Image (cartoon, rainbow, N blue to C red; front, side, top):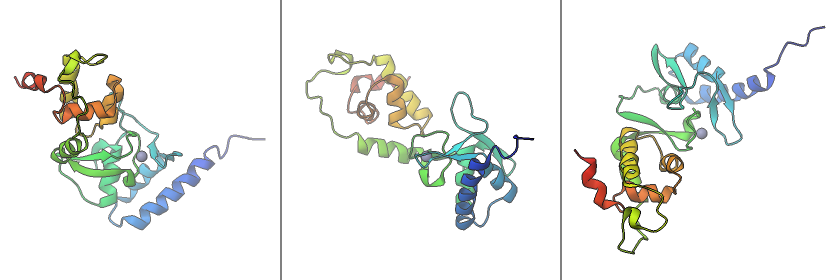
Length: 194
Ligand SMILES: [Zn+2]
């Protein structure tokens, strides 16, 4: 007797649902590449379509080739979904903070400028009325070098969300918003520019 067949049944069922969603939404896809993309997706409880093939070690994004171009898997999916090849300065950004996710409904095309404006508008209120700033504030977990690094990370990686940056520095998303909008740590702003 053989018991080795059909190990992947649940995954194939999930993929057929995703495939149907794709077929109903986009009529200009590159069929072979589209099927390969879909075959590497598993559906998470969150609704994320998680890429289960090659993940770039440092960035944490999936990677694949689409239309003969090597790119991140989430960018490939968004390209396929909209049927439009965006120029490189337009980023495929996640709303869900899940870098493995290639669900097109969890992504949007954004320019760096739009991302920055979004951050600024969300981080506008400054509750620190103490007159102190930066590491003079009691219990401040950040050093000036951290703040400079946070601004650098944000400007180099426009897709990186405040939540992701906050996790890395063990502070709140709100704190990151204040720093990026220039509401806090104003005195370090000059140090950013050489
Ligand atoms: Zn997602």
